[in-house]
Image (tube, rainbow, N blue to C red; front, side, top):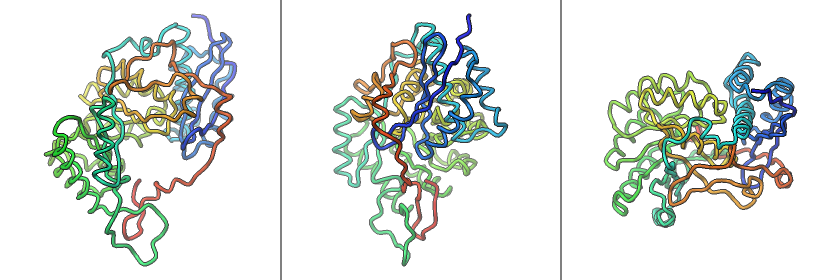
Length: 399
C-alpha cells in the first residue's frame, strides 16, 4: 500500500448553537481529506492549542495509513497522558485518520471495521421537565416519534429543589437537595410506570449527585420499576462502592462518561460491576482505543452505550453510529437533536428513524464540514454554572 502523507492538520472551533464544537481536519497528498471530533466544550482553546502547536508538527509528513502507530506515538509523546485536553486532541486526529482510510478503501467506516452486526442501533433521547405533567407531554411526543427508550429526568440533574433549607448567604452555585431528589426520582418512576406500563424503557442519569450509601438506597428503591439503566449513580472516585450497590440491587448500572484512563474502567469491567460502559469516544482518545475497549467489554458481558450528549459534533455522533453498527455488544445510542445552524455546518448529519439509527453508507465517516458556515459562529466561553453543583450547606458536590 503506497504511503498517504499528511500534508496539513487544522483545528476549528465553532459554536452554531449552545456548545463550542471542535473539528480536526487532515489533508493528505492524495487529495483525501478527513475530519474528526475533538470537542471539549469547557476548554476548547486548550484542545486547539494541543492540535496546532504539538500534534501538527509531530505528524506532518507521516503516513496517514499507520493509524495504530500514530495513535501510540501521540499517546506517549508528552510522556504524561490520559487527560481530557490531550485525549480529545488525539481523538480528533484519530477519527480523521480513520475517515481518510475508509475513504481510500471506498467504504463506510463500519464496513472497514468488519461490517455490521445488526440492522440498526436503538436510540434514546431525553425527556425532562420540572413537573410530571410536563414530563408526560414530552414522553408522549417522543413515543409518537417512535422512541422506545427514553431518559427521564424530573428537573435538572439532582432535581429542582422546592423546599431546600438554605444557609444565610448561599455561595453562588447550582443547588440541589439529595433527599428531595431521591424521593422525587422514585415518585417519577412510579408515575411513569403507572401511566405507561411497559410501553418504553426508562433510563435515568443520577449524574453523581449522591453519596455512596444514598446510591445504594436509590438503587434498591428503583428496582421495582425495572429501569433500562441508571447512569453514574456514583462518581468515578467512589466506584469501589459499586460492589455494595451490586450486592443489594439488580438495577442495571451504566458508567464511564468521565473516564479518561484505562485504569478507571478495567476493574469495573473485569469484576462485572457495571452493565453498560458509557465512555465518551473522544474523551478516551478516539476510535482506536474505543475498539479495544469494546472487545474487553464483550469478554465480560458488558454492553456499550457510548456517551452522546449535545456537546459533540455530528461527526462524533456518526462515529458512535459506525461503532454501534459494527460492534456486537453495542446496545443503544444516545441521540440529541441538532439545530438548523449546526446542520448547516455539518451536512449529512444522521438522525433516528422511528427510534432506530441506521447505517451510514457514504465512504468514510459520512458527515461533512462546511468551513465557511463554521466561521460564522466563533468560540464563546461561558463559566458553566451547572458544574458548580452545591448541597444545601454550600459545599461543592461532583456535577
